[in-house]
Structures are given as structure tokens and as C-alpha cells.
Picture 1 (cartoon, rainbow, N blue to C red):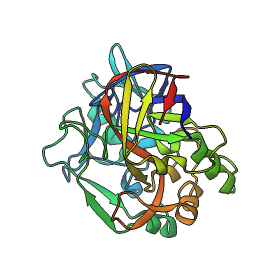
Picture 2 (tube, rainbow, N blue to C red; picture 1 turned 135 degrees about the vertical axis):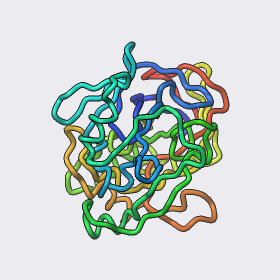
Picture 3 (cartoon, rainbow, N blue to C red; picture 1 turned 45 degrees about the vertical axis):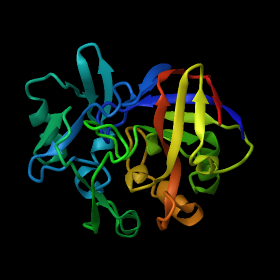
Picture 4 (tube, rainbow, N blue to C red; picture 1 turned 60 degrees about the vertical axis):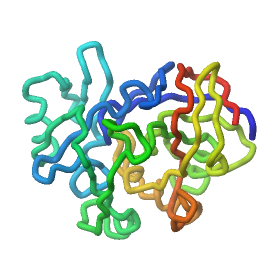
Length: 277
């Protein structure tokens, strides 16, 4: 596959919350402008709140965040509209999540988050207390960002179609996998094509150039309720059964879907832009 197009663009202003679909966006070395601009900090542990630990934070992806002229707007599952500039924003989010949190746009120095072991979550359920790994986030991102690993994440329509084909639900929603870009690769080659792009450059539109650096290991997040999308354990189970690959050379195989990329040359991107590998 040498040519494709941008099928969709997504921005997630608050880490682990649902985001917004865009028609056009600027991507710099710090990722898509406004993406993962904020995160919630757990006041009890000092760690970044992440739905990778569903027992504590599974309510996060039931909220939706969007950038507005007045700041970041957060819509709760009950339809309540909160703003990042509200004096009581921390109290409101703490009440919603059942833990004391602070909304912050400044990552803590030496920041970490907990990542529940996904196959234990599949076996024991999202409310179970399972083993978790402490992850130092953003190791392939510029300092001062809230990205899990690298500043840009993408997934192909080929991968989504293959997951849907293998899933009892017969569908796979891009939002569950939280990409910045969905790349339409058509029908050929089928299934998980982006894993073959490791080390390659993607030229998108007139200026943007990304370098693919790693496959994306999946945690329990895709299985959770995402806004109006129901819980779906098969969003991870399909990958555990059918696409276990090393995210990076030398690592053990794990369920993967999508890839991470760094920005070689920034630029604007629009739906429909050509993608050349």
C-alpha cells in the first residue's frame, strides 16, 4: 500500500475523555494542536488519572471534552456542561469520579500513571482490583505533554474493518482506540496494515511528514463505555486472540492496534488529504 487518504481527525483535549472530530487541524512537534492539553491529577497519589485503570477511572471516557473560545468544555454523562475556567471545576470532577482530582495543563515532573494489566481486566472485569504496571508516560514525546508515548497516534480503516469482522458485535468504532488520524487504506491489503509501516515516513497533504516509530499496545480502555458507545470487551479480546505483535523490536508480543508516530515536519492536515507511505 503506497497511497491512502485521511478519513477522520480527532482531538482529545482532556486525557482519557472522549474528544471531538475535526475537519482540519495543525500538527506540530507537540502533536495535534490542543490534543491532550489537560489531564486529571489524583491528589491522593500524585499520579495522572487514566482509564487504563478502569477500577478507578472508567468514568473518564463517559465524559466528552472540546476546545472552545472560552477554554475547554467538558460534558458529563448527565449532560452537565463544565468549563476548565470554572472556579469549582476540580470539585465537580472529583464528585463525578469519586476521588479528589485536579484538572491541570502542567504535567508533574517525573509523572507516572497506573496501567492495569489488560488481560487480567478481561478475565476479572473492569471493577476488579488487578495487577498494574507503573508507566512513565510520554517517553517519545516533547517535555511538558500528556501523551502516553508519542505525540501522534493513528489507525487504519483496514484495522478497524478486521476487528469488526472478528468481533461478535460486527463493528469497531475508531473512538474506542483514541486516534488522532484515521487513515483510509481501502481494502488492500486487509487487516492491521499499519504495523508494516514501522520506521517508514508518512507524507500527508502538502507539508506534514510523520515517522512511524511503534505499534500501539492496547490496554483495557477500548473495552469501556465511551459516551454513547456500550462496553465492549471484544474490542480488546479480538486483538489478544488475533493480533499479538511486539510493539517495538525486542519486546514480547502483546495485543496491538494502530501505531505511534513522531513529527518530522509539521503542517496542516484535512479530511481527504492524500497519505503516501
